[in-house]
Image 1 (cartoon, rainbow, N blue to C red):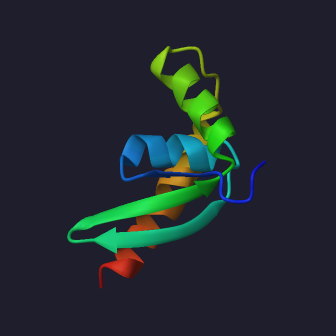
Image 2 (image 1 turned 30 degrees about the horizontal axis):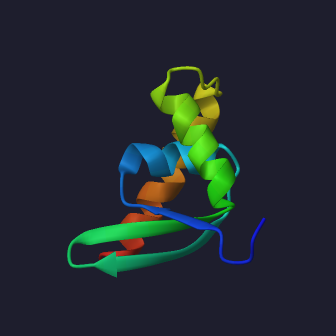
Length: 80
């Protein structure tokens, strides 16, 4: 992985999928009303999201639901 190979997105579904795939959040950034999440290993992020969009990604429902809980808590803590 390159040192600066980060992937950023503000799309809630993409954030959930990446977090549920055990990718680490490097940082978050709020621009206006939108929050961007920066994930490490941009190459892996793009591969996972490609699989997701092609409907070939297999993932545990439990991991997805846990990711929703964690990401929502991050978003709401930042927007208080």
